[in-house]
Length: 257
Image (cartoon, rainbow, N blue to C red; front, side, top):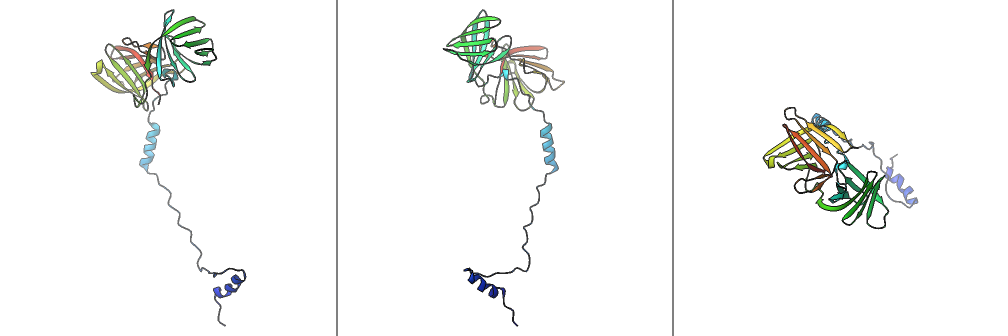
């Protein structure tokens, strides 16, 4: 007896269900697509990753060396004799004196702007400021202002310091422990690695030493009110550089990203 094809057998059933078409049978099962090979990592890639992980990173400097979100630094001359530096942001006031640095938060006041941190308060009213603490009271008047340094103006730099007689400046790189020195009004330039010997966030103090025994130096940075001895510009840090038996003194500021 002749065999009916699968299509002829299935056709009446499909028509009874209101469907059309033909059932087909595949003699061999469907094959899955071959999996893609797993990505390979070369020994060179492993070595590069290891080098990145082992590469020294620049330290995180104390926050009191920075002006925060403030656009300018303000120098104040006070009575009794005291020189202060402030940086006023939206939510805080940073204050530097000869003794160190403080961060104060806003407090309710009828006029002007008042900031407080424990027993220390600063009341700003136009070009005048009233500073009160357990040590006493200061009546201050705004003197010289300075635009805060920015990363845009100093790309790749996280701290800038400078001084006079003879003119010099130092910059710390923001990614690796390296500093660039320019001395004697630009006549000498040095780029040297450094190591951190002291990092005190509470006191806002950093001491760096040379990473090369053949070129010793010490750089000391402290969060204290500083005024340029020629221009009178206010800064939030004092900088002392000791190199080849010479001592250079100046002012500086941390530069946020």
